Length: 282
Image 1 (tube, rainbow, N blue to C red):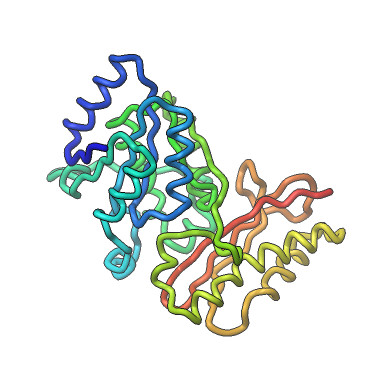
Image 2: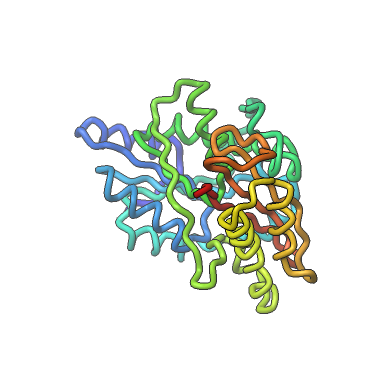
């Protein structure tokens, strides 16, 4: 595996691979790798001739500077894990490569960005996501880009970006990878204390409660949401939202019929976590 720091160098490496007839897979990340990230890399390895993993903690998508400062970073460990997953190129640029002096462009997407994460983290969050992903797609020109379904709203935003701007890249969303107790794997999990880590499984239990409510015959979204909220621990966890939305449009639903997406966000101590699950009526 080769670690690349500059836009010019990763472009040159990808150009050579493409000139040789290779297909290119891109896994955009902010580092602090876990099995969820590695599952994306393995999928890319199976499907593409060359795999590029970007490692960049994007300051533009953080609305809270203390959250940015706390975000876990360990490039040496990440590089070893990426090499073990047979990644070809680790693109780990400094901030000034992505946002050079005089940078003045923002990619902004309406609609799918305005609820849930957009409402709680601010419009600038998804502007930052869309801008950096657009840059990565322009820099690497991948045939396929791989994202985790845990960030379901982000995936929807990126699909909209690709459709609206006619970007020649296929977006593949890979299933959420979970710990044995159901907690969705996240780089932020390392910030949880022992008791917080135990309480954090409440997000998964809330999703399970919603799924069980629907399986038992409930179709009213308000009632299903109430069952899910009741399953959250009463102390030490601060829910920001629990929403039931159309899996296609992310518009909230009143009646559950067919397939819906349940999404939850909560603070466990000082750490903010998100999770989601697809619920289907029998």
